[in-house]
Length: 308
Image (tube, rainbow, N blue to C red; front, side):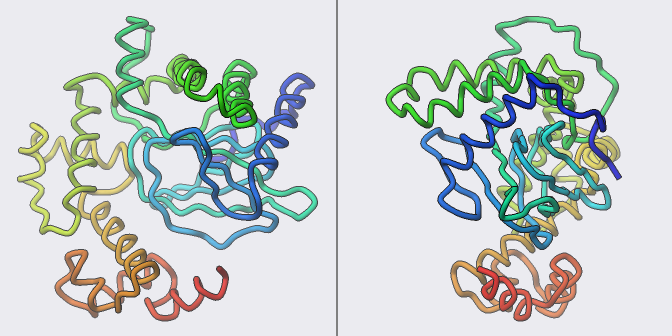
């Protein structure tokens, strides 16, 4: 299990910034749930009670909690974070999230900011070598300690939500600073490796993108390895090092999450959804669906609709 980086209490400067961040988020959230914002790629979340585990797909993103706590699971690994620590996904990952710290008096308040790989690449080109270590393949999901420099940049971005006329001019500047701070953080090499052209990390990212586009098609590891110019053994080893999943396990989670969306949002029956995402056997689909979501399709969908 991966726990918060440090149990130390917030210092006064950080605490005052956290309080402002929480107030900014709460003013922009009309109620519980995930809410989009006027800034592209920035979503805000509020919850007044703990949630059930929710399987979802994290695209490259920075997640910061202003108030409360959350667990995120990647395969068998657990990442627990809070206002002291932020979470980064440097590639697209199927995860399960669960709010574990929230009350009506102290709601869970957080933000999720999409990471633009093109902007990361541009920053690396502009700032030149930054002395990033190369420890080999590492998890694309990680926690790091929040500091006042990163939090100040995030606050500048969120304050723009209250002056919308300034967003077009000033948001790109705040975003560049936020990603600059991430690159210079203790774990910045994880973002750096994914963004370097033709690195093995970038090739794994290409394999992940290919799977997200073709998850409904039969998968042959040899074809995927050829697609990203890696040997099959290197692809398998590095893919699992980055995602905690084999390519086949990753594809399965993509299929099941898309099938759930098709049934919930488009009204497809389980058999139709299973065929749409690439399953040939509805019974196999039902078994694997139950393992991931904790209940067969009909019961899971009934539970989701009753809690909506």
